[in-house]
Image 1 (tube, rainbow, N blue to C red):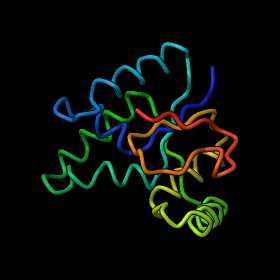
Image 2 (image 1 turned 90 degrees about the vertical axis):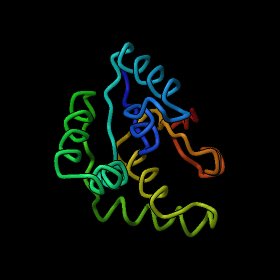
Image 3 (image 1 turned 90 degrees about the horizontal axis):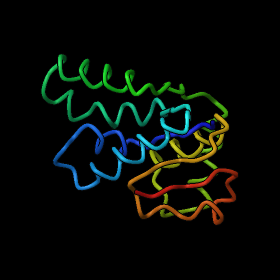
Image 4 (image 1 turned 180 degrees about the horizontal axis):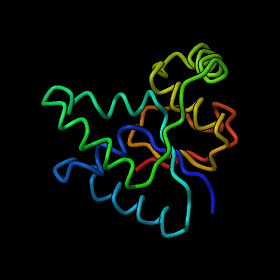
Length: 137
């Protein structure tokens, strides 16, 4: 039993059967829950997940929030420590975008064992000197 942190792409893929990562995300989440892992998501990643639904309606936003709550995934709020860690990651890895650095910093700060993402452009966990594993779907 560990803590698995989820990037926005994993949640988006899980919720959208037409997404190219849907099957992988569904399988990965089922495996994590089957191992009794706890799930978490950065507040910044939650915002990313809600952009598409917000373009449609308030009801769509609430449906997505409910679905995330049923996973169940706890939302980790952004704080000064996470912001500082994210800035450091972004400064050291110029190809890493700030939203991604926030997700990675949140996972590290929360003590996650692994971070699931659909993003293939991130530097490796070793290159970023992380204590967690990055699982790319």
